[in-house]
Length: 639
Image (tube, rainbow, N blue to C red; front, side, top):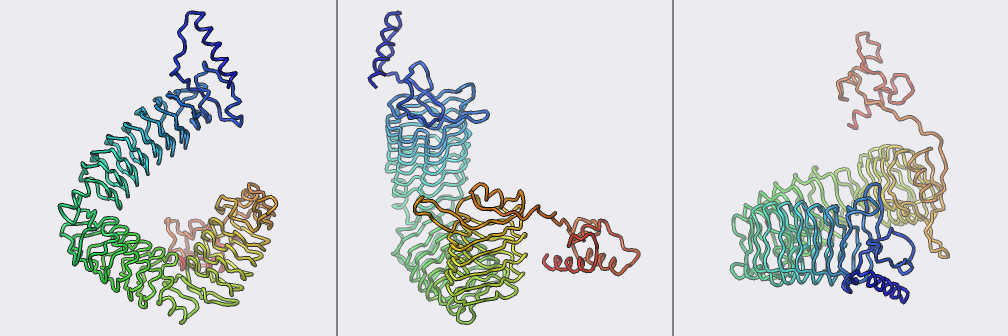
């Protein structure tokens, strides 16, 4: 540093001798350097080079600013570096540059990354050009002294926590280009007094203006149709609304009813019971919902003391955690109009005894009725095609089903087999092995899967520590993440050609897995080292996989093995794929008429016309015969 001081003194002396003005003390040059492993202190101090204190990355046709020094200065980002335009300010580029007071961004910049200026506590002003169309979340989070900022026309989303904790921000103008204000976007802006939301905005996220302690005026246009939980909590604006009525309603959305007591009747005309509207409201025991309501938001009645609820006809969706931990809730009546029940909707409703799910529901989400321990009667319609993780775990209904049969199957979905033992055969007709269906089934040693199964969901066999063998049929097309995690005695497995994707951590901690064969050369393998791991070296502190991945030449299996240094065994060149569609008459569709034509051809009827015989060669042997006809009929039945 002494050398630097001497150098500066020398430059000043030369400047005086030549009659030039001395460099003002307040001036701090903006320096830039290409990102390098050389420590900053070792880079020569060159005040005439205007870019050296900014680190950056060069791409093919542009430059991204990636880092700044922590010295106190007012910064002007250059429009070009080495002849290339500076188009982006990267993730965390100026994060916690606590001495940075002001910054000017050139017109060449189009994007500002997440956390780009977060924690810049001394930053008081910033000029963002109209060229910027994207500003990521947390970009100015914790800029406590930022008093004003312009959001350029062209930015469409004010992302999560973008200005969270900007305590000195007194006003901000939201441009007409913005359509969404995301979660916590302005939370903790203590000196923000008023806000006008433009007509372009349709949604305001949870906690968007939470704890804006001086926010007294908010203009919300009719265009806003979705408002998140606690969007205006701890603001004077909301408190003043509560004093006028226990129901705070904006654009037919009931935002807040937490001061309600006794028997509550929601006013007619309300269309949406907003996210968190009555959350933790302990002072009311019953509620009447009007026929005008079409949606019940996330956590709308969570932690309330309701004993029963009738949801009126017209309601189409119940949000996530809507009745979460309503522990006194004994009964709920669903309307026929209902099409969606969110995850965790009735989580831990321990007094709930029965539910009848309407025909409009096609999916029961994760943990919807988890730990409803008194739930004995459940009616599930045939319309339900998927059942999520632990949807009915820890319910009396599931326990009763397990006593009736170790395979709990609903509409072809095997949702539980955790009481199975030894060598098992899954019943024919099962189309899906559900999430965690056999989780930690420690007594399971082998399993046979029927050809009716098309999907194995995530965690299906997680923790089956004594499972030694499993055969996956050609009918399976998808295997979810973590499916065989911690199957410590599984030695080998073959993934058939029909499987198009292998999920995250599928074989994590399969300690004795020696061989994985992947027959689909184009199978999408989750791109992470943890997809195939079965050991940890305490000396090197590295994970490893000591088995062999087998696959075809130039396959995704080979590419994965080479990328993550896994042992690979080639199966040779991949066979040509069968392209038979079954469309023998060339009408662009595969149906019964094609099977009729094929049958006539096999019987030798002379008037049979075939558009393309290869479309019926299902076994790829170059000959049309009865074997192809059988395969065609099977495909037709599957369709």
